[in-house]
Image 1 (cartoon, rainbow, N blue to C red):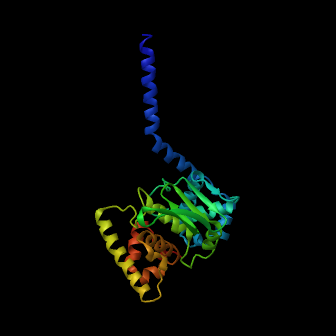
Image 2: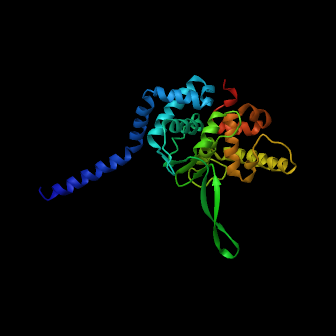
Length: 277
């Protein structure tokens, strides 16, 4: 009896550990339910009214859902100030509101691969290896306002975040742009085709996006004005991020000028911002 006791205890410990691991999704869901049900702080409501006017356009039900998502986002995703920046509630609430907009429709979790947001006061410099002739590599320095990394980080410049939040009708929003990249990067490198429901959905998405991408490049080559920012023509991943900015900020114009494109985004995000307010 005494010899079998350690084996029994080891078995029970293993069973308990396995149960704890298996229950993780359930525990996470329960925790998020509790966070979402907490009263939304009054100071945060004031920040939304003053700093993120786009939120006021949302239907009342969507505003409530956005606030619930924000509570979860802010509890789980640290926003870290860089180069001496002290992160305030204004910064946290503004970023969370814009980052959670793309999550209002389809159930995608709360950016499960995102570990942290790095916030700079203004434009920041990153260095990347660039392949040269003969197999050599050199470091290329780039000045950026935002960037999304597949390793679980989003980098943002606060002055550009603030500007984009204050001007919701200009079609430029660095937070929406970078978090669209996060959706695109779920499970791999960004390629302009985020996770879709079926092979048919991928085929339709590819056909529409490829056609619109090519048309944009043709119009730019002819010097014609476009609703879509020229930066979208650099590569498919940037095309998806740029049109996502338009989808949330200039939805009606996008729907009129690019109806097939708008329809694909409406299906993906499961939202119809052209009908808001």
